[in-house]
Image (cartoon, rainbow, N blue to C red; front, side, top):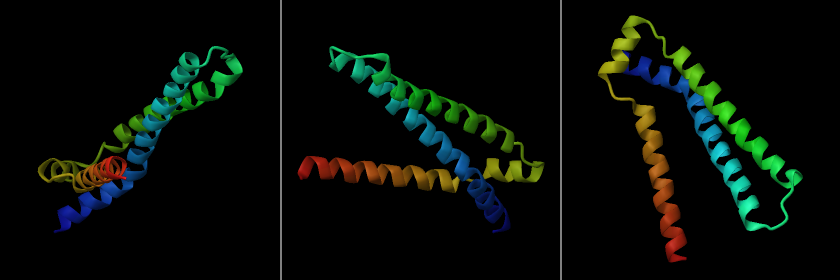
Length: 114
């Protein structure tokens, strides 16, 4: 049980960086999507109307890249923690995946039935 507790603690230390990477990706996708929508949906689009969306997209890419690099640096664990990490399942990652799947299914059900 000690190895599992160490792994969970290590994953909770990485959780802010994982969430930063996810939020950075969402910001990049949302920002660049708004740029495309602004440029294609309106006939009079200026640089001033597109600039905030571009900045959000670029900031999202920067946050995504920096979080990924920080995760890579933090992944340099001691040998015993690395072996424990390889042997056991990543519980926090699977729990977050299942949580996001439940949110997606609940949202899909809500939007299709209401």
